[in-house]
Figure 1 (cartoon, rainbow, N blue to C red):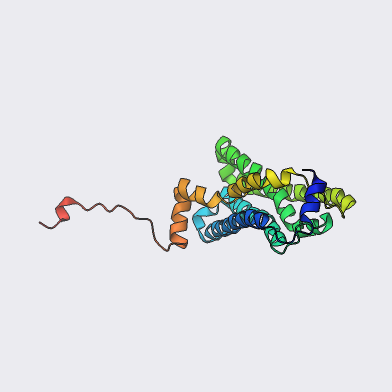
Figure 2 (tube, rainbow, N blue to C red; figure 1 turned 90 degrees about the vertical axis):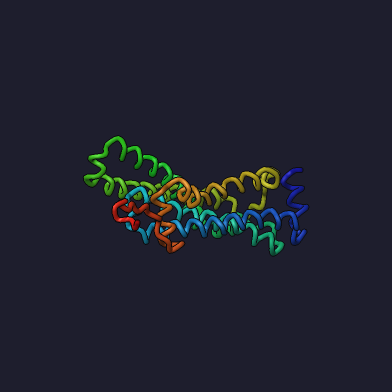
Length: 225
């Protein structure tokens, strides 16, 4: 089926059940991921043990990808009201904030990896103030890249503001790929909770209001007979 045939099929169809269900499932993943990422940010802010450069970068990353999830949930509300198609201009303005954070988060992933590499390769320099310098450099690079990429987005899309075209692949492959993509962006908190003792303790303390159990050793001579 060609893009023109898809457009003719859905443009005046109103609410399409298959699209509502498909995008509704994706929206549920998005909202779940947003809540999980915000919990990660909250715990990082509250816990003093999570104030290292790497922890802060991870929290900023979780905050950024929450806007990516918000942007991906918009489609559900569009199809829910039976609109189905919007112009590229309107789409750009709706997605401008998610686009900003997408560009920021993608490079931030690389920065987190570089931070860990430097911390292992040059531990003395890193502990003597290098982590703070790296943090400033990372944020500056991410901001510069975000601005430049979104200028390019605007320049490219502004030439086709009235475009309503779609590709057949968007209705066949994209929901599956997007679902995996959204689950990946929603997995930071569960993965850190399962794999990091430090994060697990912080989550238990500030969300479950429980302290990690400690083993108490009682000398045998002090035990009652």
